[in-house]
Amino acid sequence: MFRNAFLKPALFVIAASSFVAACDGNQNQITWTKASVAQREAALTSASAWGSFEAGDAWQKLEIDHNADASCPSLTQVGAKLTYAADGCVGRSGHKYTGKAEITQVDATERSAVASMDLNFVGFSMEKGDHKIALEGTFHWDRDNDKKEKAISNISITRDAVALRFDTEVDCDATGHCVSTEDSRGTVDELGEFKLETQTYPKGEGLVNVLILHGTDNLSLSSAKDQNGCYRYSLDGHFGGRLCL
Image 1 (cartoon, rainbow, N blue to C red):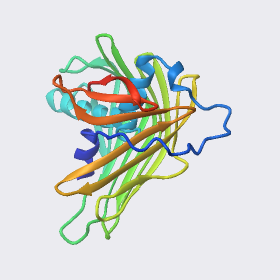
Image 2 (cartoon, rainbow, N blue to C red):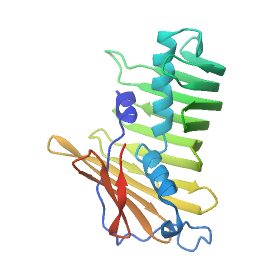
Image 3 (tube, one colour):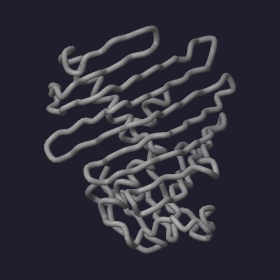
Image 4 (tube, rainbow, N blue to C red):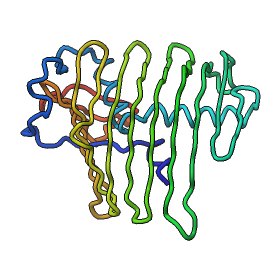
């Protein structure tokens, strides 16, 4: 199921730096060397699931907290559409919820591989301690009978003090090879725009993954896990830091 995949986003290896960013000529390109560590790591974290990392995390926490206490968040269902809502209540996990999250999911059957999922966040936020996530926008995923998949993010994310925007589309063939479209983009605060380049494809029993955020310079995430379970990222081919997801 796609849900499991995007709740546990794939991690990525560094791709060739010879790629010429499609946003060349755009005066609003981001320069990653001018970004803070928090801005770089927020962008990489969200981009690791095509802009849906926080959406998947929110869905999981809403479901768990509602199952523990039906009053926070509340849940209504109309057909296949679930709506979680809260006005500042605190769930059993200790997360404070505000706003609304709508989830519509159509599962595959024995006779059909067709499935889809839509997430819609309206004025939604969740916070615990010093950590806060706010979401506004949509995420869509579908699979056809040929097992081809599509994922589209049009979502604004505030991750603590960092504001992100993702407008991305990823297409997957039946073998599991997924590629972002040429016009997949994101922004970070007022720093500017980046082009999202991502690929996922099978190799043997595992997956090879590529993630590059292209601006005037390139930010990439590696699948090499260190002894603390964190992942190296690079800035134009040079070590930039470690990201712990």
